Amino acid sequence: MADPASTRAQPSGATGVLVLADGTTVWGRGFGATGASVGEVCFNTAMTGYQEVMTDPSYAAQIVTFTFPHIGNVGANGEDVESKVEGAVGCVVREDVTEPSNFRSVEKFADWMVRNGKIGLAGVDTRALTRRIRQSGAPNAVIAHAPDGKFDIPALIKRAQEWPGLEGMDLAIRVTRDKHEGWEGGYWTLGKGYGRAAFDAKPHVVAIDYGSKDNIFRNLVKAGARVTVVPAKTSFDEVMALAPDGVFLSNGPGDPAATGEYAVPVIKALLDADVPLFGICLGHQMLALAAGAKTIKMHQGHRGANHPVQRVGEGWGETTGLVEITSMNHGFAVDVATLPENVEQTHVSLFDGTNCGIAIKGKRAFAVQYHPEASPGPQDSFYLFEKFVGGLG
Image 1 (spheres, rainbow, N blue to C red):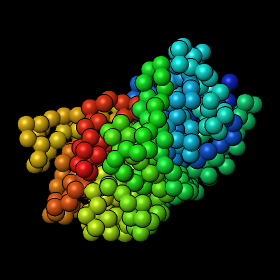
Image 2 (cartoon, rainbow, N blue to C red; image 1 turned 45 degrees about the vertical axis):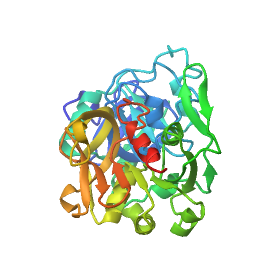
Image 3 (tube, rainbow, N blue to C red; image 1 turned 45 degrees about the horizontal axis):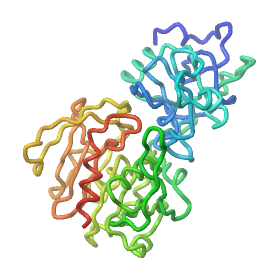
Image 4 (cartoon, rainbow, N blue to C red; image 1 turned 180 degrees about the vertical axis):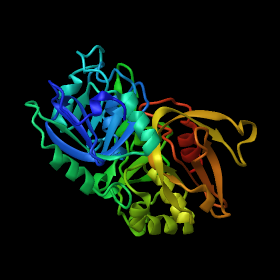
């Protein structure tokens, strides 16, 4: 990487560093929590919603490089948190975090990072780092912050090299709930905050939590459902005991093949029982695995709020070919070449042609790779929640 900040010599005033597994050191100014955390370095192209990104469980064990240079300017608040469980371990940004300038801010972003144990690194040429990820793939690395500027670089390199990476890693089990929960939150509106779910609403959706964002449940509520959230390892019998009208398969982190060891048998049983299913992100990959397809690790992944996806296949009528601008966060994808004959591809990425949606023929079961709830991102795809909930009767 040509950026001078990636040389091994520590520049004056450097209080933070990103150490890649190949020994590259990217120096900067640390902020947020102190210490060191290991993960996979990825990049996100969203211009808004950094707090939602940092609290998305799908970013567990990842270090997010923000391509937008001004991160932290609007501060932080309690409403833009997507989950209380583990999210990104840290972030890399171009500019120093300034004083917040937004009427919704209740806390400085740097203070929020401290309180949530997340490490930040500012003053980095994020364009060069993003270019490296695009060219060489997402590397394993350690992000570290020490106010005194003292780092044991050989030890940090060793830690980055010994970290096994995301392939083969089941992270859903780390970020799922530990018990059933009747979802209470409604949709957010300016000046009023979050509404309340109607506990007598019908239909009843049981959501399997592989590391879900809270706004997914709020969108299910907005579409008219009553939602019960259950842990990732909930059995088929336990799900059916809740009398669901439909089952939702959530997003989440890690290797889908690893999570599928316990998730796929449950989903297969749900398909056999003709239970309507809707999956997002990791849930999309789980449904594909249950149908007989395979997943693959992507070179750099898709992460941002501006990804074009096109509707393909049958059943769209006049909207066939329509393009949705979507929010994405995934480093694995369904291998379209392995889709069985009874699985139809419904959406495709216009960036690289990867699969972004499937439907099971003869079943009320479909899924998308992207995030129709956005948070952050565009609202083009809310219709999918209405399609699912509206079809439950």
